[in-house]
Image (cartoon, rainbow, N blue to C red):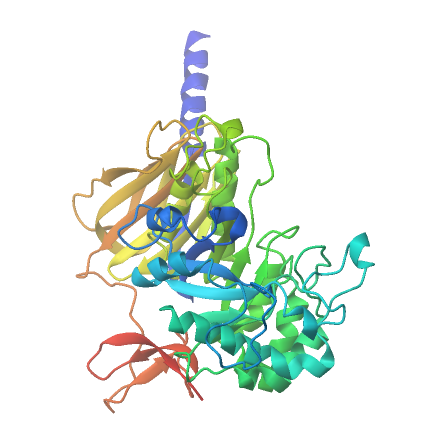
Length: 506
């Protein structure tokens, strides 16, 4: 009986050990190239607005701890005073655009991307005569939309914003059509149907002065839940498609692998970028987020990558549920003003390491009995192969990795809720000789980034293919696909084997 019991225990132990291993197989199939990650510099996040640049100093640039590289700002329709400058080419704009300038300058100095989003066109362009959306009793429930006789004023107005910013030292990289065109609000807002946006872009977007303003790119309107009707209608029309560089949207009410993944299908087909330009995970809560909620944020980032996202921009950069503390006493301890919060370190796994990489297809095989809420993704970046792994359960696991190349060294970046200081610890991964299969630890309730150095003596994932024999440059979209006619942001592969990102106009 004792022997039978001992045998049963031994078998159970072996089964448990087998069940506690997750296998991730990474292939050499390439998907999107990731432009980067960022946050919004808007009034509520930066009060006193415009004066405090500490958040961007903490968050932005390759030498910062977090590594953000995209900043979103509002193109405000609000006048600073009663004086309206009649000449649209007058750089001394009457609009309230100076607030984000100090932060935008720092982001640009650190090599980042700055883009602007209108919450509304000027009120005198709209059906309700105000920049407000109109969904309030005080405004008589007047739905604010861009008047059809003012469609030809919209892009010249954006040019004025670009001129103002350029004069003040910031070359804006992109502008969008509208913040949440499908959301009727009582604050600054403007409604567009997908058909109205198509008409605006198709007939008037050529007025955007790309030549004067350093090849500025045009972003689609940013619907509340990434409704694919807005981007699909633009991309199915060749004239409109030629004007749009980036499709965008938000995630409110719709997780990444729903609407955004659907919208990314046509974007990928036509070589357009896909940006998630606003979401607040677990916001408006009367406490600091717990560690489980931080892991859910990590899963959102990961799922955006799996959906085909090339740029992820969080909402406020400073809030008790964001990246930098506000100092508000009700959310202390742990909410020290202008100190990095746990969510910033979660973001750093992606922003410092996935930016500039190309996603590789990866598939997880989860053993029976692990009951693991597990997510993964993989990337290649220069000589590095990167695997992300997120586990929200209470049990530590083993992670078996099957890679498409041999690797010779590695580093494990680990974030757990147990850390008392910075939430991103580095641990070397010992590799005695180049291998394409290895097992690493996956701690309980953790976010993990495994960074491996590719052994160049092995069969590595190939770089962008070069056109053979003619010595002329070839061009690729940001997914690595050869282009017959380059336009917009693309990659130039030159005859000497070097490559660079460039903007090609028509």
